Image 1 (cartoon, one colour):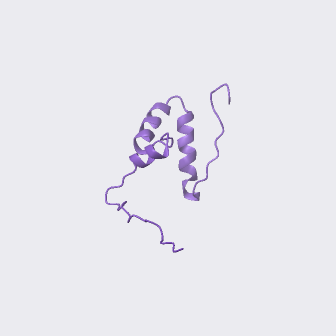
Image 2 (cartoon, one colour; image 1 turned 90 degrees about the horizontal axis):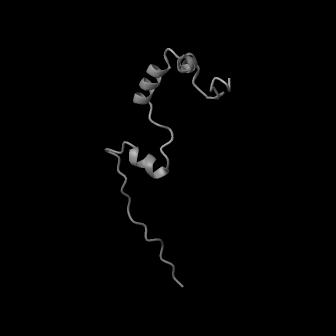
Image 3 (cartoon, helix red, strand yellow; image 1 turned 45 degrees about the horizontal axis):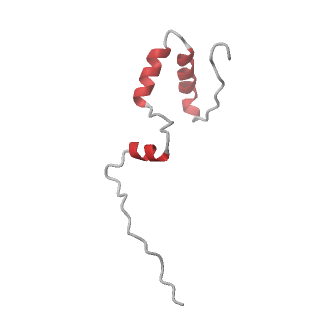
Length: 79
C-alpha cells in the first residue's frame, strides 16, 4: 500500500452510507476515475483544513444568524 501511495483511513458512517463511502474510496483509488471523482468531491465537500478557527468562522455561512450579544460588564461587587 505504501508503495502505491495509499494509507489506511478509519471513518465512522451511518449504516446506509457504508456502500457510498466504500464506493468513493474505490473511485479515488482507481487511476481511471480518480481525477473526475476528486473534482466533483471538491465542488461539494468543503475543505476540512481551513488553517485556523478564524478562517473557519470567516468561511461559515452566517447569513440570517444573529451573532450579536449584549455586552456583559460583570457583576457589581460591594465591599
